Image (cartoon, rainbow, N blue to C red; front, side, top):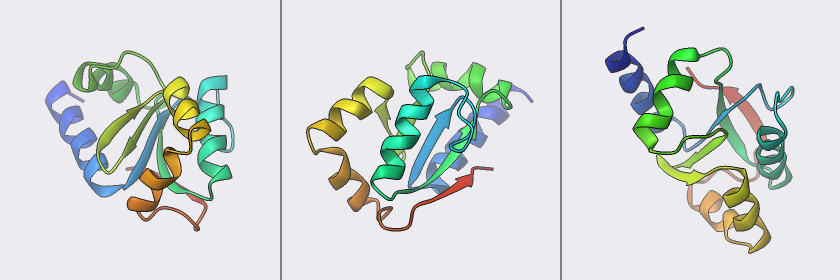
Length: 117
């Protein structure tokens, strides 16, 4: 897949899913501690979110850091906006600032995972 098509795929995913986590592995089987932590935080807030396993999507893994200007994974997006990685999500959760963002995205109370396409 070429870079232009990958950028279109990313844009489509960000538009389609109110809460989207680009992560290593899946929420049930994370392949890195940082991805596991963010998925756990979202689950603890009963969040419905979509995810992309970047280990299976090398095109997205290579392209998203350039598009987002964020070099590492996981990357959490709420309503198409990059929130950040594990440290930022953890900090927002600790300060009580993450839940209102998720409420605004109407993603709370329906804990479920969906693989983004």
